[in-house]
Length: 181
Image 1: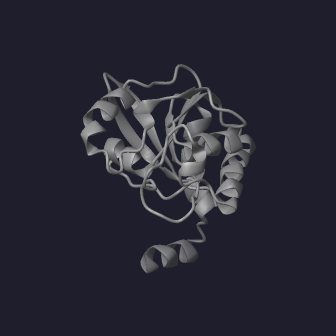
Image 2: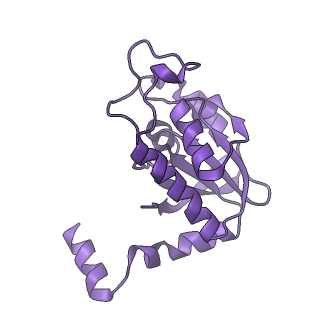
C-alpha cells in the first residue's frame, strides 16, 4: 500500500486521474454499475428479527452514508454519465442509497438481495444477475457487498462501485472499481 501511495506521489498521479479511464468508459454507456449501499449503522448482516418490509427493523444509512450517497449522484451528474435504469435490492439501505444518489429507483429486484447468511440463494441470484444488460445507457444496480462479491469476486467498500462490461451469453468482464469520496 505504501509503495502504491509513493508511486502516486512520485508520478504526480491523483486518484481522480487514475479513475479517468473508468469515467470515460461510463460516458459511452453499455456498462453495468454495481454500487454497494452507502455507510450504515454499525453491525454485520441484519439485526435479529428484522423485517424486509419494515425499515425500522433494519440497519439503515447513517447521516454520513446519506451524504456519501448524494456525492455519488453528484459525481455522476458532474461526469455526465448516462443512466438508463436503476435497480435496487429490496433492503431499505439500498433503496435509500439509490434515491439519494439519483433521485429515484426504477425497479426493486430480489436478485440483488443480501446474500450474507443466505448462501443457499447464491447460485440462483448470480444466474439472475447475469441476465441484466443495459440497452443504451448504463444500468445501475445498488446491492450489498456479499452479493457483488458472489458475482464479481470483488468485495467493494460501502458506496464503492464495481463496473462490469456485458460480453453476451451471461458473461461479463470486470472493467474496474470506482470510488467517490
